[in-house]
Length: 288
Image (cartoon, rainbow, N blue to C red):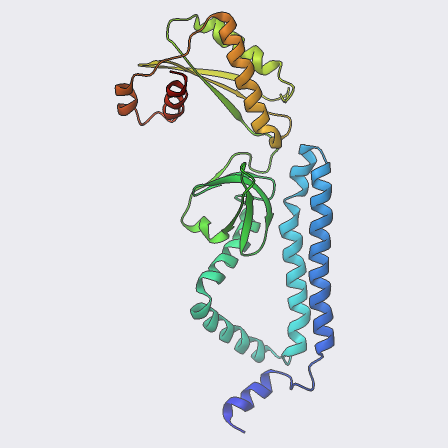
């Protein structure tokens, strides 16, 4: 027997000594438990009000991590002779091999542990990562699944936290600020417009009454930009809420006789720093 084979024999149990049935049962039980917990908690979360939903969803990654660690702790002693030296040898070998063969994969898993600990985002959060925006529906150790408003599922590795800014719009809370934009000709009564837009938000069926309503305006060379800010009852209603504010806001402004702004092309070309200008110009071009 070679020295390598002797070392393997000292570290691992022989093939005949390994209880494969127990290992299979542990893996199957852990898998079934993860699936059952995820299905039950996700089902309950969808039926609960937004406040309780935001408390329940972040628990999923932690429970999954606990189940996986427990399964590993139970399986390893069935494969390796339980001595301190053997565990050191195995950990060193796995670390060396993994560092070369699975560098990116391991980096994502490590990032997954960091995410569970620091929680920059979690299930139920609406986030923007790179060019993807949507709600996090589920999280694994390596990646998360993001559902966009266009009904598209985007899988994003946790390793993005190392080199990408994470924009979390609600950070584990049910509060989700929604903004409706309006662009008006500068010749109008700004105080009346502001009060009217405030009333539009106040009478919306989606409004969270405890949340703050704000009407922010900024004067531009081409007109006045109004931003109506408010919070919906449930963050899943953000798009119907914005649509409701926009439709009823336009009706209210039309009743007041307020005219929409008309942005000259020359101004549009030189004002790229205004994030709302592109959208405004698109609307105006379609209406003219």
